[in-house]
Image (cartoon, rainbow, N blue to C red; front, side, top):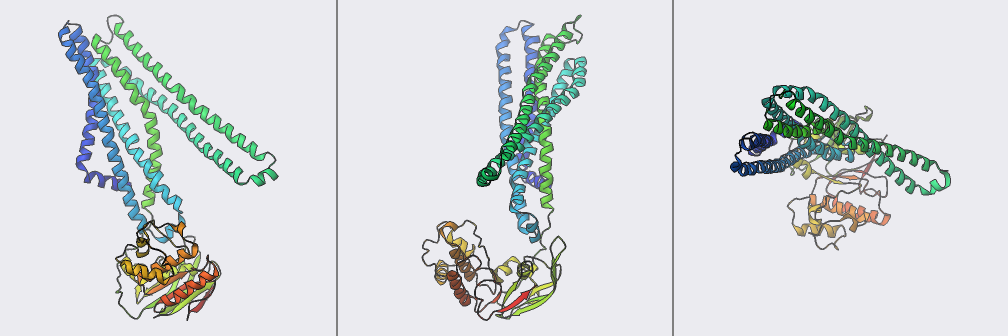
Length: 532
């Protein structure tokens, strides 16, 4: 998948909308060339020939042409917003599908903020690339071509003059816009630094008052001076750009008038053509002024496009097609010559061999970094071994279908996760489970006080221990065969930890259990496997 494929898929599925947008763009560009033509006819044919009886009609046509330009422009912008938002939605949906299929190793390389930036900042940059970048610059270029074509029709000589002059004008606009843009970027960056310094000083005020001796104030002053300079530079270019372009435009119009009136009209243009050309020259400067900003937008947005394509290139899990019947009675979880290393190349697991059968219960213990969490993730298929195999009844856990894993495995995490649904949805995990079963699970873990299951779940309503109990209730409802416990007593008080162990002893009596536990009591009949 790539951004280009997402765009093609959207445009293909919305052919009528795409065709309508193209038609409106063409019509808007063409309509913008009509008023100067009408103006030439009014001057040369109506006023010069004394046909005042037709003047009102042409005046209304002239006014109507501008109304048409505005209406087409409005429709064009509205439709382009729909198209660009639709494309952004298509990209985000494809990204969401992709992120759900990413290998777990990717989540060890990228934090949540980095992944979120792909979905927000980079997709917004692509949206700007479509509307304010590629489409806008295409419209402006077509408009410039149309204007130049009309100028050439009126006077080939003046058309050549304008054509020769345009590159210089575009270069000047680009230079000024680029410097203004760079100054704005620097100012924004320094604003972030200023805000960070304020936050840093407030958070560490005690140390600042005791040890700082004016260092923070001097640092803050230097950053403020840099920010002031950057803002002044941006304001300067922003201020000089419009008058420079206005002066150049006036000089071009003055040259047109002088050449038209010098020695019997060197340009060979009628009065109406001169008036119309003045209007065309005025219209020509608007797209030229926009080119610099549009090129900056394209340049900036291309980085976002490249980043999203980079995101789509992240490795996905292998297709999980192996299916295991939930009714199989004799289970064996086997590690067979398992090796595993993360991307830095350092081996975490080396030639590990072990097996659990039936209702075996094993607790992993060992120093930090010994591979306890990695072994557990290998066991339920979140990670794939670098070499060797991790299997349940001969099937690789990393290749088990999502349906099989959901039925086979239950996990009690150290930090329970909740997705913002109702209490029923959080506990049932959107499976078809009767409300009475949910209430029985809550009673089993001592949370029968929860009444309304369809109230929005809020983690702040519960203590850390109660959140762990809710996670256990969720696992009980899953009716899993193999249970994984990841330091579930690490952050709770001893009394709650003891209650949880009693509940788990009942809930796990007929299950295979692999756990990590350094605190409190172990499950009944659990053996200890020390690592590292």
